Image (cartoon, rainbow, N blue to C red; front, side, top):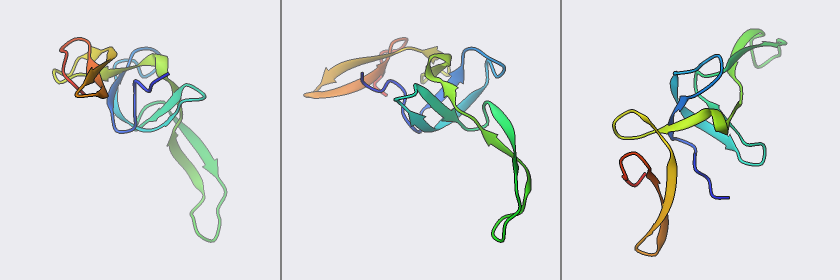
Length: 101
């Protein structure tokens, strides 16, 4: 299946503890169906001190399911993503406005 959400997309969280928050996708794992969004679903990781890094409690964004994310269109509202062909190329477009992403 084609990727509806990609790295760098602005998204809004639809469900979970961070519902309504917005952020940018930093990485996507299509096989697991999850994405990491900057500042969303943050957990505290306890790291051991080493020669290169200071130990302690480090906040880290954890993966969130792709079904709980929606793309933000040009108006700043959540939208679904569709596909269409323009000039022989397959492009993504926002279903609410029809704009090419």
